[in-house]
Image 1 (tube, rainbow, N blue to C red):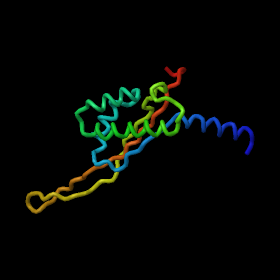
Image 2 (image 1 turned 120 degrees about the vertical axis):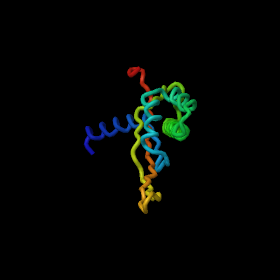
Image 3 (image 1 turned 180 degrees about the vertical axis):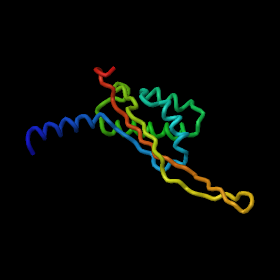
Image 4 (image 1 turned 60 degrees about the vertical axis):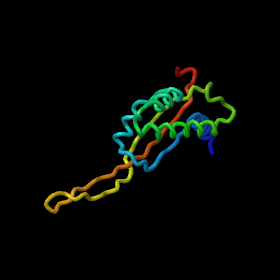
Length: 135
């Protein structure tokens, strides 16, 4: 490996050490409902995001709260020597994608049937440490 390539690889590795993520797959909530809650916490500091989610009346907020806690724990596992409060963690990215759809049929009048789509979603939360230069 060349010296420039090695230096670049080390720089990328150092950047990735500050970033941690968590995923929630096949969550049985429609993506539209989950995005409403995800938009509330996008870009917020991690502590504030947890407070927002804790007091939100939506059912999707409970699942998202657990996911953010998991992302914080993943960051802590990567950076064992660092302090969570001192790191100023914030939600860098939160993505809600459509998951698998269960298709069901509901009887309708005159021998017809209506299709019911039970939607699910995939949520990805990326947490980063806020540097002194960024704030």
